[in-house]
Length: 239
Image (cartoon, rainbow, N blue to C red; front, side):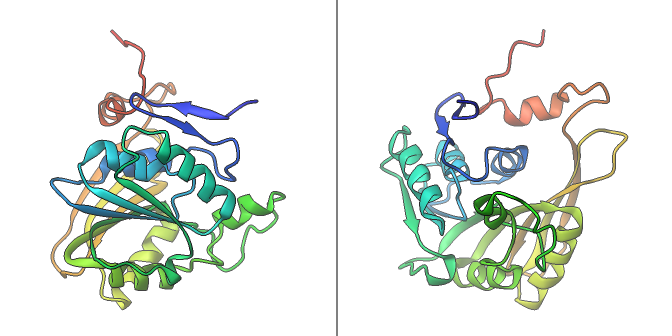
């Protein structure tokens, strides 16, 4: 069976039951998220558990991951149990709107569903459609719940397509979350920006803005992409 698992340097990601398979977005987000010496991280809409696992590899933090879909929850739980960090990752089968935490988090991370207002709903696979559309997790709810669950100095990291990302920044402002970092992602040098990586916080201060390109014009990975992902991907020697 194709796409049943993906092998990273330190863990294997099973994804045979997942509606959404591993994509570049999650890997970019997981690599760019700055963890430092944080003690607790929350992953909203974990899917296969990829971001929870990446956060566990990058830190010594305790990680909670929330997933509403039962099949995805079970797959994420299996991936967590079989990982080297099973004692630090807890997968919760619930909607984030119903998630009751007894603490607040240093970092919140999410690769959220982003198709808005029921557009693009012609996807045949119902579970894939649910994972991609924001019906059960509107941007407004995501901002409200992130604000509720994050510490005063925490950052909320997420990745979105450019149009949705710009919309999210405005919605976040309405819920007292402000842009701290913005990473403009291009697929190739000659292409337009098509992804935004956002870090949002409760403090309203000047934000930093940087650019990043994944592939060269010939389709090979840029040196910056290889360097960014080298702790996770099994890159072949390019020398």
